[in-house]
Image (tube, rainbow, N blue to C red; front, side, top):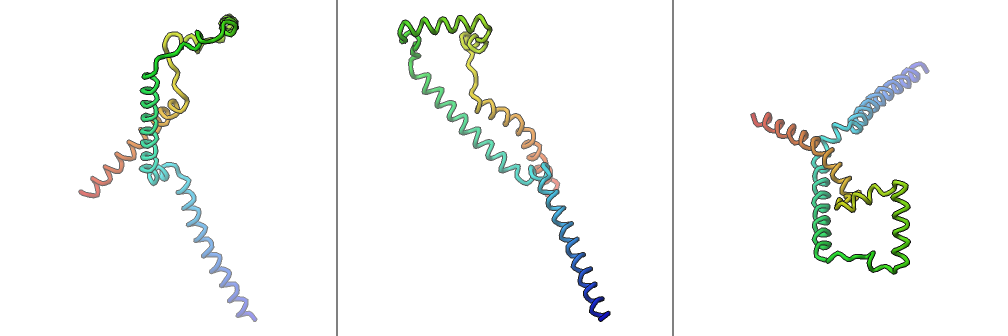
Length: 149
């Protein structure tokens, strides 16, 4: 009976060691997969390609929309309103101006056009991603040069 106990104990110890080795490998893999630098090195080209594709589509949409709008003569929709609506609009604008609530309308009167949110987000994303992508590309080029030497 003592030999069976020793054998069972040895099996438990061997199983425990295998589990510890597996847990160590899993912990290392989890830490590596959650590391943003490693993920950027691994997924950097895909992220850059997606950003470029998004940028190209955004520029194409922006250019098409701008060209489409510039072909049409600008319509004075306020002049097309009924007189009663125009008076009410002027009253509301005067009331808003007296309360100081027309800061964006004042910019629009001077010819400034606000960018759509998707353009602002795209530009900000591009500004944030550009240094990271350029750094990853530089590291990759330096690594290739060192490998060739």
